[in-house]
Structure formats: C-alpha cells, structure tokens
Length: 218
Image (cartoon, rainbow, N blue to C red; front, side, top):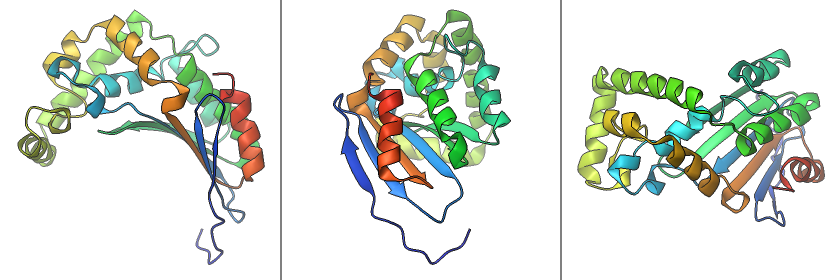
C-alpha cells in the first residue's frame, strides 16, 4: 500500500538470554511480518564435507515438532489464517519468516518458535529431504544462468566456504551424517546467535512481550 506516512524509528532490545529484537512500527500497515535470523550460513561450514549443512537444516525445520509432528501441521496452520511462512539460507545467515494480519501474530510466532526450538529432525524426514535437495542441485546443473553464478563464486573465493554453492554438492549432501545435522542445530540455533525482527502493525512494547513469551525461556 503506497503511503507518505513516515516510518517510526526502529526499537532495539536484547533479552536476558542474549537474543536481539528489532521492532519497526508501521502504524498504517494492515499486516505484521516476523523474521527470525540465525548465524547459520555457508560461512559456518568450514569443510567441503559440510557444504550445504545450513541449507539442509533449513529444510528440516519445517518437518515437524512434538506439538506439530507432521510437515502439514506447520504449513496448514498458517494457511488456515491467511498467512504465509517461508525461509532462506545464504552465506551469512538463515532466516525464517511469516506474514499475517495482526490478530494472528501470536499464533504465527508460536509456530515459528516451536519449529525453530523443537524440531524433531527424525531420520526418515532427513532421508526424504536429502532426496529433495539432490533434486534441487540437479535443477541448478540444468540452469546455465545459475551455473554461471556458481562458477563465478568458485573463481572469486576458491577453496573456501564463500566459493561453494550454499546448497552444497551432490557428494556432501549424499554423505551428510544425520548426527552432524542434529549437532549443528544445537550449536547454531541458540538465542545469542539469533535476531528477531518484527515490522508492521505492532507497537514495540507489545512486540517485546510477544517475543519474551515465546523465546524468553530459551
């Protein structure tokens, strides 16, 4: 929605557990977006054998928790309230984000907190998602445009994480040990390596209370 109304100044806060919160109030907005950023990207994968680990984990966090044991339990809950949820991984970070109308923000935050703090990471889902990622890598190999980007990165940053495809290689994804994925989840998905950003129709004090409820005891 086009508007000339000024943005209010962003408000920052750090919780006792080290999690950082950034709130950007937009009083004229009719929706709210919440994004959860983790220090988990390809730069945190020091060896070629670990290439694609952050991206692999991103996929798995949508695959079920104790409270929402099936992947559809996560996606359908947001669909049912007219919201959307997605994620992305790059070299520096992994981000999970959702957008809803204000009355559904509590529920959307609960879903995000649950999947990011309590993912099951069961072997059957890891193996199923391994196949999905291998298909994604095959699609990249079939795309000249994407191949140019991969080769350019490898030329600019040879033999280091920034020079590898964020999704990894066929070899690294195929051989990625399940216990290493779980270990990486416990190492990187921690509050003092997390930034939560809320923007839209929400006041800073309400945002802080919301995040404290869902992430304060982490």
